[in-house]
Length: 272
Image 1 (cartoon, rainbow, N blue to C red):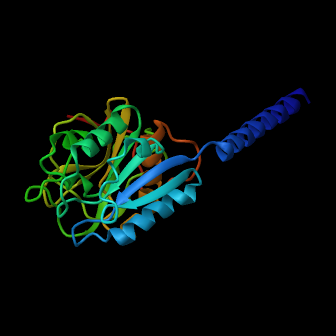
Image 2 (tube, rainbow, N blue to C red; image 1 turned 90 degrees about the horizontal axis):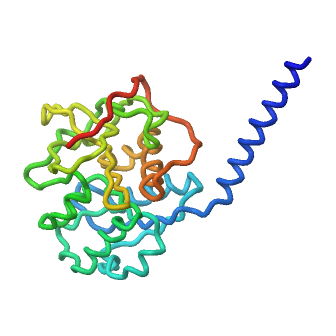
Image 3 (cartoon, one colour; image 1 turned 60 degrees about the vertical axis):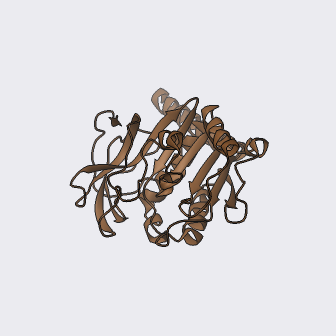
């Protein structure tokens, strides 16, 4: 009898804890996200991937997403006061055919992250501003035209390098259908979360990684060539979690994992 009462009380406490957590999540302020988009190489349909990125975040119910197009507002980074309204900046554009941004805009972006907020580099965005060395350090690894690349878009095994990280927790090795980015450059210390063996480079390449920048956080996400690639459950889950981590330094509980196969956490996953 006593044991039954104890079990019942434990059940009530667990239920109350779950209910409290759900209530707190529902009433918590939403994470303010600024997605900057509007230009890319012809192979990347930003007009399609940007709405999909927003859709994934919207489905979590934790984000308030604003989309800005550089072809309409090329000075989006010039006003530091306007940027203060956001918790994280997501870049989904490549500036190859655009004028360089102003020195003020460069400092605003760096200060935004350095002072404690987040930056997300999506897919090929690290190819922007080839002559801006500090942006390369911000990204951790970056695409260089004529040096970086990938083989034919297709299926490959994405390996979870660190399975207990907030971004990858619950996600197992999975078969991706995407471009496998390779030969990114950079010497910054990064925390590699997902990698894959490239037949093009004959190397194991980092595909999802994080790093600190000052007091802030950077999430570099190489998946996402098109909407089809972004519809993979594991890709979607890591995307929303990575944006949340970059914005807040943590990821709230909830949601189910994706992917098939399985593998335990490996060593720290750090690369230099």
